[in-house]
Length: 202
Ligand SMILES: C[S@@+](CC[C@H](N)C(=O)[O-])C[C@H]1O[C@@H](n2cnc3c(N)ncnc32)[C@H](O)[C@@H]1O
Image (cartoon, rainbow, N blue to C red; front, side):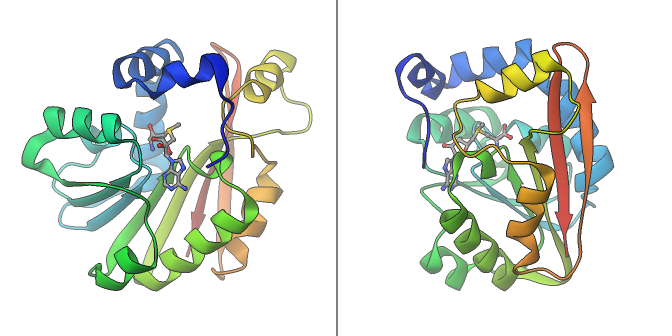
């Protein structure tokens, strides 16, 4: 995982991470992302890769939730909040995990791609192609550089701790190597100004 260190390390603590998320209006963003892009149905099997503190789970009622997250502190926080509502696995999602996972309807990679290199992202899409059922989908969300975006948004996106922020075309190219249909939406947030790219691959 490629991340900026220094002051950004403080974000590894679950409460501080959640506080910063709150200031950035993350909960409203999750509502938009869940309604417009995840569109999870009750009974669906959902894989959430890099689930953080699993806050998306509030927006996925009635699903079978399986998450993988490398940061042990985030996993502990997720288990404390959501208990039996999902399976919160600590670690990366790799070959071994994909080989034993029952196929899923939806794979979520929210705010993770901009932390990982093209090679890592390629491996992840390859694995997701294996575990997503025919007719299922992968849905991602990331900050993005977009031509003509608000200069403050560009500045804030550029300050993200992830070192692999891309343009929408850059994210699309990663998914298109493994999925036939890749669509997405740019969201220009106003307060604070910020630019997001939500993408669906089938
Ligand atoms: C910005 S947080 C997003 C958390 C959550 N998905 C969300 O949307 O709120 C990025 C997360 O990706 C995790 N992560 C980083 N590299 C990863 C990788 N290669 N595979 C899976 N997760 C990764 C980090 O530990 C962190 O929890």
